[in-house]
Length: 314
Image 1 (cartoon, one colour):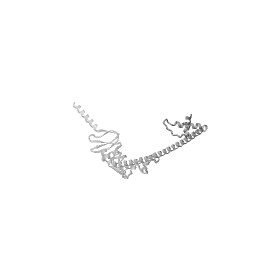
Image 2 (cartoon, rainbow, N blue to C red; image 1 turned 180 degrees about the horizontal axis):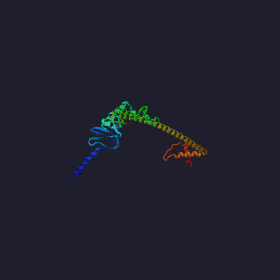
Image 3 (cartoon, rainbow, N blue to C red; image 1 turned 30 degrees about the vertical axis):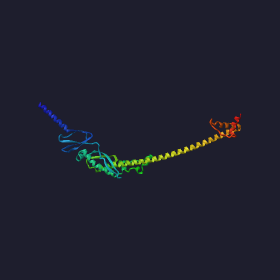
Image 4 (cartoon, rainbow, N blue to C red; image 1 turned 45 degrees about the vertical axis):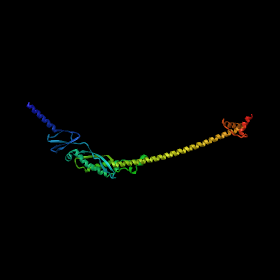
């Protein structure tokens, strides 16, 4: 029974020693065996099962993939003294794990070093560049002939200037400056990118006020043009109305003249055929206009009274 117990105890110890001796390196990792705080052997880059001395040696693992760095959001003045907020990011990798272990030991410490170097590089490049270089790419181009009237009224020649370097080249300048200033800690800075550029709050308010003023100026110009066009249309309409009224009055006069002439001709023809009957007809028409209570003062020798006298004589 004791023999079995000893065997079981030895098996457990052997299993513990074996588990402490074996370790696995992932494909995304690189490892270094450390003994009493000092690296032993070279860098293990081959993924799979590896061995170490149990209880004496330890394994430090480092990522061999691209790692990210986010810089502080910083207020920086440009060459033209515009204060802007710049937010940058970078990618880096551990290229020399041994040097990395001796100098910074961890990714957090490495990011602290990157903060010092890249933030300084960003400030140096931004402060020596015009704002237009930071917001436009090198291939930026605007065809003035394709602008709308509204955009053309706002933009001037300065707004259409093509950048000399552009944002992409400035990012390369930041990368080159950072690589030059970065001490040898076993890492490689792959690239640097500007994530966001914006005006500070006080400058942004002034920019907004200027944009509002420009838009109000454009609106006033359009209103003025619209009022001028409206007056022109109303003037043309009134002139056309007067022309139509004048033409209508002329045509009415012509029609009335022709009608009067025709009536006169008819009257003349009727009078020529039988003057006595025509005189009687016209006189009777005059009589018919008199009402029942009408008092007519007529000379007894009047021609108008002649037919009444004739009627009484009968």
